[in-house]
Amino acid sequence: MSYTTGVAQQAAADVTHFLQTFWREYTVAVHNVEDDPAYQVHDVDLLWAIVDGHGRLRTLSIEIKGDRYHQTGNFFFETISNLGKGSPGCFLYTKAAWLFYYFVGNGRLYCLPTSQIQPWFHENSDRFQERQTSTPVGTDSYITVGRLVPIQTVLEEVPGVLQYQRDGSQWSVVSNQSLNTAH
Image (cartoon, rainbow, N blue to C red; front, top):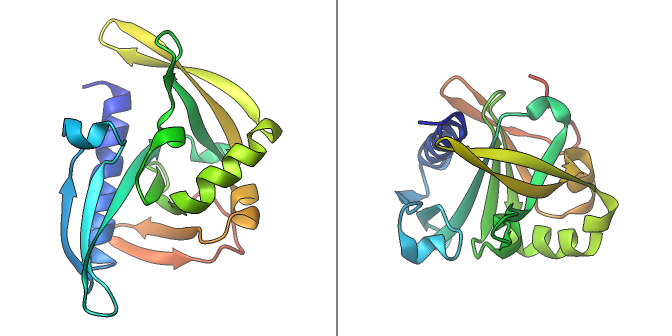
């Protein structure tokens, strides 16, 4: 298993734990659909079945982004998944209702409503530095392109962003007024 795959698996496990514990009163089930081709084309990782405040059963779709670089104070919003193939970045095409951006190193989870963050990013992406990163695949690798977006900028400009902090097996709400990514 590659280090990158390990980060993604840890993020999926921790987000699932978050949904099953912090939201246990509402959670009916969490289904990991990362390996299901029917959901891969929509870039959806989890289906979260809940009973809402009105007693209705609903299913929410979630895309998970695991990141190990919490100390930078930035999100990395992927715009090109594989430069060699010209495939668009998951951030641009996900059909998930929520993007859960999780820093595995410090346990900080940002829940970004896709309906808010995608249009905001389309309008503002030129403000942010473009970066490339190499993603290992076996003995080879490919180039991913994205934008470094300051977390504080997103918190100040995008409505509906939620933050949570993991401490051991416990999760707590983090105020959007404070930003401390270097736990």
